[in-house]
Length: 390
Image (cartoon, rainbow, N blue to C red; front, side, top):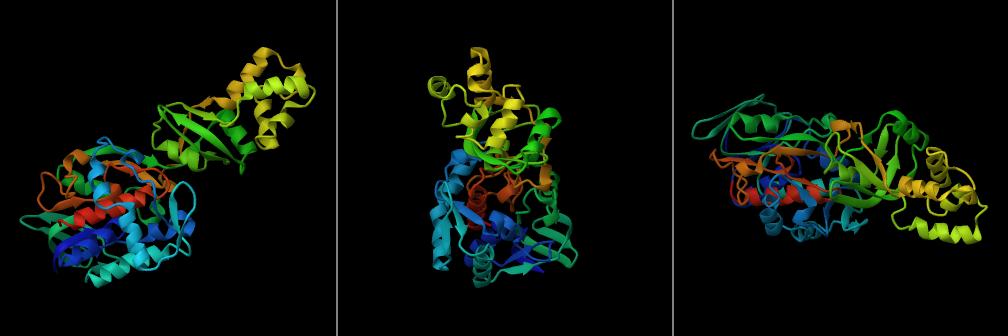
């Protein structure tokens, strides 16, 4: 079997690249080891696929080379993908902060990609495992269904997140085989795990959610936090893991819109005999205020508090600092941070600088977006731009 282009991986980036190249008249095959393509698309966004975001900026992406993503994001924007879904009359809505979701189900997005591939004459081959890749003038994929040759080979295999969906390090292995550098990778957009006293608190509060501001290094997010029986989750926590490394400290403000000192002055005059947990219960769930105060032994009437104790309460609620023991890992991670070094890849064509005809797109690259449709947009942008050149 011989093709102009073989694409390894039938996810968002791979299918986008296949359709784009096919529309240019290239003979394209997508090879995937799973029994069907687009599995991560189908499970994303709670089954409704957060397929892009109105507010895509290069600053929403993390990479050792922060300039790499700019070209592709400007050449194929969120509005280009929205035009595609509009062409198919897909119903969608903005959930929050520019995040766009399917009105019905994620299958609608996959159906659009498959329809585009079908129009472009793309061959999609599932349950096809790659045993070896060779290169002379062209590429030869030695597969479970026979040898497949191509002029161009596109690696769109994704990262290691959610191994139950078949995620592997295969894309990184291909990069290493051809001498490309790999930026150390790890699970990201993933819940934190805790140990010791912090874990015991989290277990007591498991299932409780509240809006916070969370900070690590110089990056902060304001969003919902969820206590779990293993630690901390929720959008705010997932976002900050893109910037966190093991051993680093995280700071949380549980009252991001409240000046506690100002309220202390008011309570001193009007409600000094009230229990502090009830006063704080105006802003956070009372279960949280009670347990949080008990941690520092200050769950008592307001008028009994000393100035020093009030200062401790402000610190405890407004800038609680902790070091996560780790994360839940690839099992629940939305993405893999790190990957193929973008310094080895053309930001225009997505071709490897030192290997003719070899391309890398999507999550396998060292480009990781925020939670909220950014990683899908990177898949569409990188897939489309590579599809212009393969």
